[in-house]
Amino acid sequence: MKSFCFLLVLVLLAAATSLEISKAESTCKPSGGKFYTTYTCSALGTSETKATLTLNSFQKGGDGGGPSECDKKYHSDDTPVVALSTEWYKGGDRCHKYITINGNGRSVKAMVVDECDSTMGCDAIHDYQPPCPNNIVDASKAVWKALGVSESNWGDLDITWTE
Image 1 (spheres, rainbow, N blue to C red):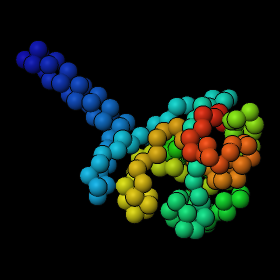
Image 2 (cartoon, rainbow, N blue to C red):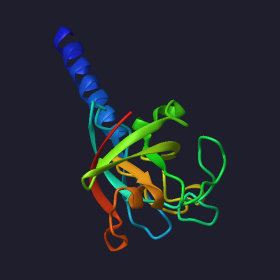
Image 3 (cartoon, rainbow, N blue to C red):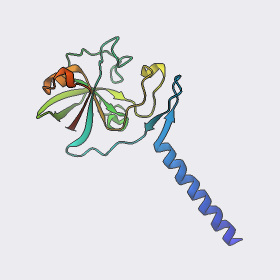
Image 4 (tube, helix red, strand yellow):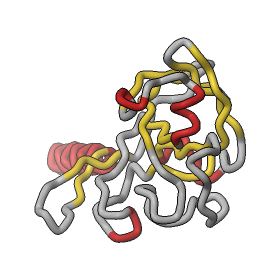
């Protein structure tokens, strides 16, 4: 009986471990049938956190979808604002705080106004876009301009950021 109980405990532990792993990365299925990875954690922020800068329009009708999560408002492409991947967004704790973005040999301060959702996507609320990877700083055109990146190279840029 003891060996059966021990075996049962091992099986339950293995099942619990696999559930934890499946929570970390799962998939969503948009209407097109393609599956996307979702993330529930990001690399821990350090004095300089490595990330990928992406381009987003926070204006009404822009590719960001609805209004920003922090204030339920739209923001001009001429304003240096960003959305952070889910864990970095910290449930809104970073809303309206400024981060310093370093890239292309320059730096710029930008205000956090939104979450780049790493756990959900592929639906109307997220403009049918796939979930964000867990290392994204999604930035307005103003951020890209301040970093001196030519428009033809806007898209993905390796950066570091600090609070």
